[in-house]
Image (cartoon, rainbow, N blue to C red; front, top):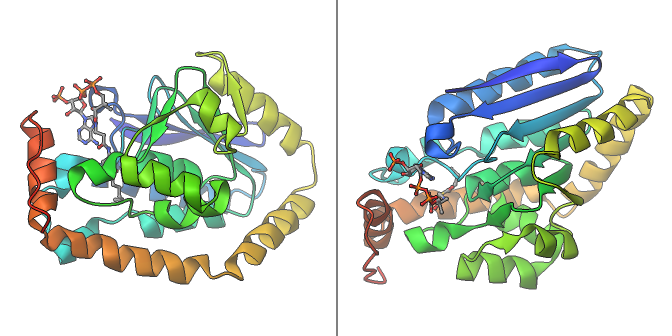
Length: 254
Ligand code: HXC
């Protein structure tokens, strides 16, 4: 189990590896991602970053680690600080997704600049079925990327999108054959890595700063408050325990 980084020329490849849990992201993995980000930041030769999970990108945050959190515990568990650092990496980032990209996994992909997925990938926000909502930028970044109505449909229904539908609505840049995702991401990264890092940095900064002018940072902070507050509800406990006990949740609407 782990998140590690390797380098191919000017491209950093970050790999998520927790296959037994479909790459569900626990605290340890997120701390390792944080360390990878620090290392990449210190390497001025890096011009593009790929984030990749083989077989599955990530089936969300680790439900077992969250299930019994109270709001303070949920706040401490939250991934937003690390995802925000991912967004702030000065060079372009690409999420290379196979299989499931759900919940906090899809939010991690949304914290990247570009997204490529395999044709069988499934992308969604199933949190509503657990009695919560996305809490690592999903309710903020998804509507900005795909529009409010599509984001609301995904978040309210919890239904996953196919790769083809995700491409159609602009959630992913490109769909490739299963198994070719890392190669396709590497091709795109190599193209980017031929460009001037100085120009890439200013271009990325300008795009992000422009989007911040509608204050994504304040919005994510607001989202985090709302998200962690949900861990005081009966339905969050019921939703997560039902998943862990492999049964259907029985919500009480409180
Ligand atoms: C913990 C998880 C997990 C998760 C899968 N597993 N997703 N464990 N947290 N998010 C584990 C299962 O418990 C199981 O472990 C193993 O991975 C294989 O999963 P199965 O369910 O047996 O596989 P399958 O039947 O193929 O179904 C795949 C699936 C399903 C549809 C992706 O696993 C699923 O619904 N997972 C939960 C998806 C989800 O709700 N994600 C959002 C989480 S909330 P065992 O030990 O039984 O083999 C979130 C909020 C983020 O992400 C907010 C920021 C912090």
